[in-house]
Image (cartoon, helix red, strand yellow):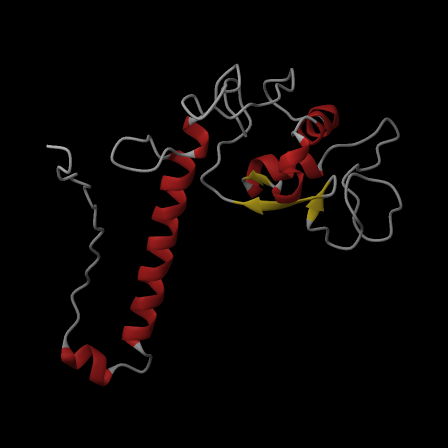
Length: 174
């Protein structure tokens, strides 16, 4: 059949919580509003997890599942390239600079760093020069990898935190 049908599976997430009329009427807070906010937070975390760690089977192909030692060669092999730091337990300033400058020019406009705050960002913030000065500048420092006063960029590129990205370790892509 030239004009056959195509089946597209749709996956629905269902969230529910038991709530009685008495709970709604007798509460000193707005339980429906509070519960709606918690549901929205849960949905956002689930969505982030699929975008970052999705396995590509019945869900999106996530960012972290698309890595390979060699970048993809086309749309049929969409692999994300990476820069090896040469270290298994830390990040170096050289690896951050290499990562920023190895992005092809056509992607420059929308380039961002994505990493977790409690491990990777902490390691970046703790990078120091030979005189024990922090490279990731804060306050009135003139030197550093970022602009002063609570920077929102690293080497000129904005960054985004997500606790779903891996910590720095061997065979990880933080």
